[in-house]
Length: 246
Ligand SMILES: Nc1ncnc2c1ncn2[C@@H]1O[C@H](COP(=O)(O)OP(=O)(O)OP(=O)(O)O)[C@@H](O)[C@H]1O
Ligand SMILES: [Mg+2]
Image (cartoon, rainbow, N blue to C red; front, side):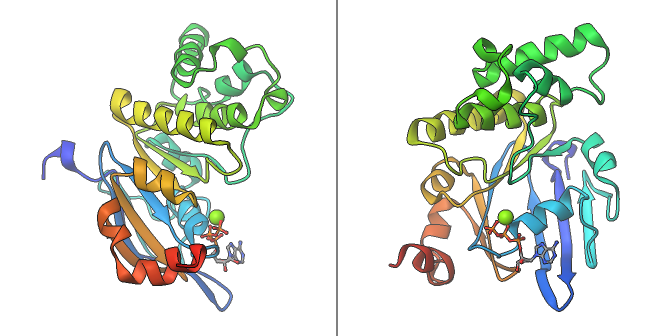
């Protein structure tokens, strides 16, 4: 296999139990270069647990995790982020009382270099995200949509090969959603970064993702293009039908 086509991340039989509950069960999937991969499923399906497993925050009960073909099972979050895999948290990861500039600067702590190089990186990141006018503002005072972009900016400032976002669109209005989706596409198109998107907003997932993985009760239910997933009877029964009542 050509190095350029090698998956960024592969899981084999990834499993995580909490007591008697199997939150993620025997999961196999891969994330490819330059793709936006959606990870969907009803509440409690195991999406955030999968996130925590692949970013090293949880150790798997069983199974393996490969990053660029290297076995990274059991590696620390820092070791995994240094391999180019960076995440945000479902309930936000920004410092509310710090400026937007200082928040984004946090994302450049590792591997970017010294002062001038880091400041350049912050400026470039802010420009990408449309945050340049807000750099001096206290992050906690910004509208919801901009705060969310700051969280993405912190993660993207490290220029990861894979950016993992847990429900980045929750609570945003339509304009903010459209704006954030454009940012994700630019991150992919201009920087060749892959995106793993955990999201409940189906319209957004269907419009922006190249492929989608569906979880249900911790189990893998389907993988496919948005068109395939929309037409998949199991998915409609387990998830779409369940949530939208048709
Ligand atoms: N740290 C934990 N301890 C015990 N149980 C947990 C823990 N984390 C998750 N779970 C359980 O594992 C299952 C999967 O949870 P998870 O948070 O991964 O779901 P999710 O797909 O992200 O859901 P949501 O859409 O609500 O965010 C749930 O039943 C949850 O209660
Ligand atoms: Mg979750």
